[in-house]
Length: 300
View 1 (spheres, rainbow, N blue to C red):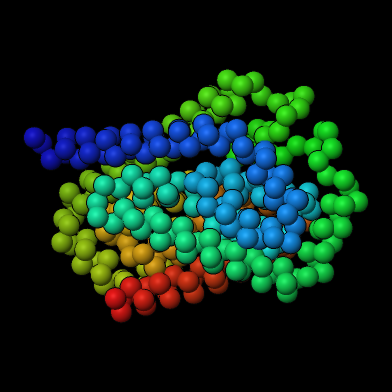
View 2: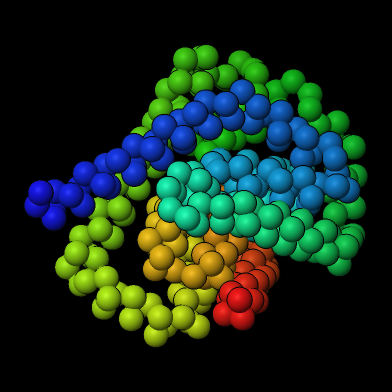
């Protein structure tokens, strides 16, 4: 069989597996997204730890929901940072549908991201105690959770019951299908590009280049991770699965990758200063964590 056709068929097969996984997960998540948003608000002092768990959900809507809550002063900065750091977008479906011997690294990634995100979020709220306390007081005064209060999902849809709520078909079928097809397109394009790149350059030449830039890889991965799009997490995950990116670099890139949440945060001018602080903290944590993981990996 022609090598180019072989690359195409492999890319279609791998992308189809990811499509099935992503749709199944988004279908299930569509029933509980609003409840999770409420949980983040109610468990105030434990919210950063819950934010770490919520952020790990492989769906770009997690960071959007968190940014929306922060803009309404319903969660603290520590909680938002925890969600942003834990956010993986579509990385986990790709890692868990990886049929090579490194499939278990998805679990390692989850453990690292939850631990780092929760710890950093709690520390930020302890340092920024007065601001966190104001958020709690604001929620008590506003009596959040009354009728009419809504939260926004990843594509601008409301995720609670109400007058503006979408139909069951649109919310639980159409929206997951559309989102899953977008991810399928990203994965397919990146799989094809990477497959043809390897075919054109040669595996030996590519491996030599990546090995030579081993200690710069976390910084390069952070640059990719800062792209506010699901495609960045797909790219990083695909590179790792193909053996072209070390785990430390993958961790750095996915820690900084908060998907569309950053754009939602920047939507209001009054959030600009906070957004810079959040990005600076995320950048520092991502870089340090990546190099620590890289050093451990080199010793092993």
